[in-house]
Length: 69
Image (cartoon, rainbow, N blue to C red):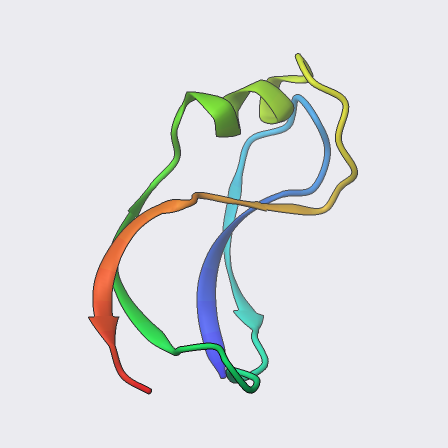
């Protein structure tokens, strides 16, 4: 399925909101239609280079939505 994601390609670079491919849910997982998501301070640390991380990295883990499957 196609999604939109805030992707960090390199530490210190601006986030890039792009379309990406995501596999559907596996056994024991649910599919949530995300209505809103935020990037919080713990996302900003790797983006700014404060914490070591591998890139590319999809940021944003505070979300709300509707369970679809």
